[in-house]
Image (cartoon, rainbow, N blue to C red; front, top):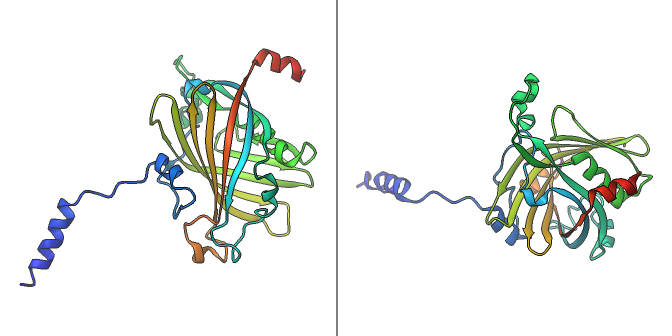
Length: 263
């Protein structure tokens, strides 16, 4: 009768449906009960957004919740001080621009082949957005510049006062379009903060669910994970050690008026 058990195991393996990966919409709904990172693919080229996000926007970002699952044993730097932003709107400008699809292809870009395609897609102006976001939270004097690697939109450096740097490298991403007026994306990136006696290294996930109605709103969650180099990594594994949830409200800006003001 011993052969029955292997036979039953084979029947179970071949007849049982495969486990379904969690969708990004389900992930947002499950906040803050996150036990691992989302399923994502290696980041190649830039993230393409829906056409209805094209343009320049005045964004009001409001921190509505923050969670430290392993507190008080493990708390990431800055977590407690971030409580002062709870329910306090922070405003800044962002923009999403058109670029040719060929220029977003890493192979064609590396070969420097001329583009014959007139097709375009919408991508974030990462340098513009990163600079405005950093200044909104850290102040104009603290942030010197934000630079995006010209050979890869997935590598960004924020130059800070006092010869400090924050290097962010996007490793993977995923997108979902549950409906024409909904767009959900996640990006997982590695951060290195330099400028102290010992560089600080961690991994960050940003998952954002955009919704277009009379206006555009978004539910954004930022999760911080420990790097494998962190002494506490094996205590937490792939579970985030800090989670921040924001509500984003987008107000369109007349780009011509915006350029006039900036001059």
